Image 1 (cartoon, one colour):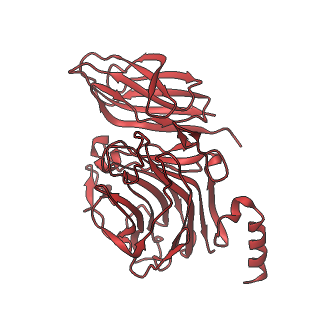
Image 2 (cartoon, rainbow over the protein chains, first blue to last red):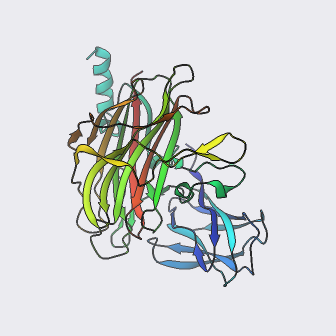
Image 3 (tube, helix red, strand yellow):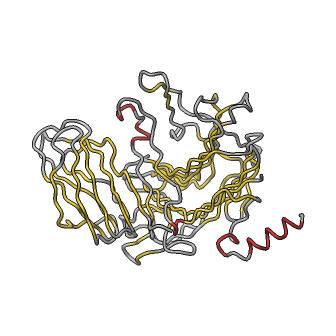
Length: 111
Length: 294
């Protein structure tokens, strides 16, 4: 059987303001992931970099070290490659007052 | 019992993976999540032109996970006979729901049987038993007659275990006959939507009170057996069992709405979780067996 390969839509049409993150996603079976973030609407204000966070239990989070620009305009897409992330995975961003972005975030996971 | 039935039973009972199920003659699918997602996916709501058209009940849904049931205090729990289970997680908001779905069609309108090993638990954010934090765990079919076999309906049998509501530990099975009003989506006149998992219109299954094994701290779980028999010819439930209890289905009925133009022979099955507090609810499926008599 081919190794597991999953596209998981973890945030769909969600508008991020302030401290924002995707829901905890458990993927300890996966050796690698690519995260895509697409802006579904034109963002407002200045955008921070997004960061990858990992967790042992889905409740307590650590910055994994990967940071990447959020998409600057509607339909722009960015991605981040990740490997060796243990179990829980999420994308987080800290937006300033007045900034917002509506995102589609997908995880592409491979065993 | 014919000789073929005896032979089939002997073969199945010698296979540990099948022996814990009691399927009808034809196995439509045997989904053990140690093998991956097995065709279970996210229930996305209907939309046209913009995702903003999606009803909020569906917009909150996210993708199920392959989980080892990891716990902060004792590590991975694992499944009935392997490392993985399918995990359906709600958001951490009172009333939040999430659904995992498998989409099939049927080839004979006859008896089908759904069997599963399931459990549920809230996210262990507190050192407290938390037994009233999950509102419900449930499942449903979304069915429609064949295109030449009408007149008939789109039929949606729903059952949920109402575990708790507003802090009261209720523990009973419920069903529903009504969905929300059907609402057009977009401008092309091709798509509609309704929210069949709305919190309204649940009715008690007569004799449906059941105390399940919850265990003694917020992280330990025990697996439960579920079996639901349904006749696609009569579009009626015939039997429902959870662990050692078999429930009378005389008082049960389904949501019945007019047949829709793109859903002939539809056989969708779905499981869902619902939280009663601002804490994530987790429903887990170790394995699911769908079988039919054809």
